[in-house]
Length: 133
Image (cartoon, rainbow, N blue to C red; front, side, top):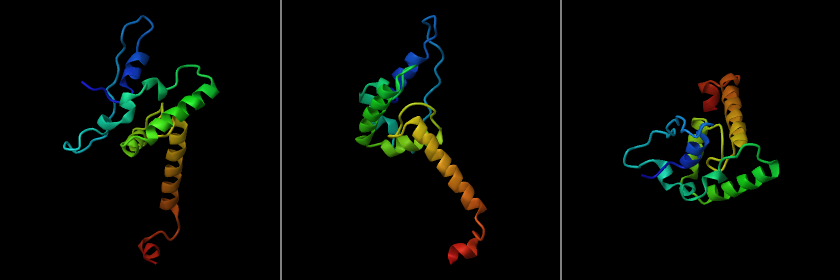
């Protein structure tokens, strides 16, 4: 049975200190039409090293930046990059490279989206007449 992207890393990361598997939550996948199948079935990262997309503990900054750039190159050639990015922003995924964005980049995108949404709600004269203008 195929695994969602990065699942093997999630399982490895969930190992307890005593070597026993810890409980691993099921990957969160957005609802899609049944005929489409899950978006992650076509993800290029399913065939690449999962460690490329998630940082090991205490990773040096230069190594992290290099690894993230390599992961982004994989994402750039992925046919489901947009769906992956939307998933990571909607969940939101707190770690790793998803849809070509790092966790820090996703936080910036989410903050901009929240700020823009707040600006639109508070804009004076943003009623239907101003919008029709």
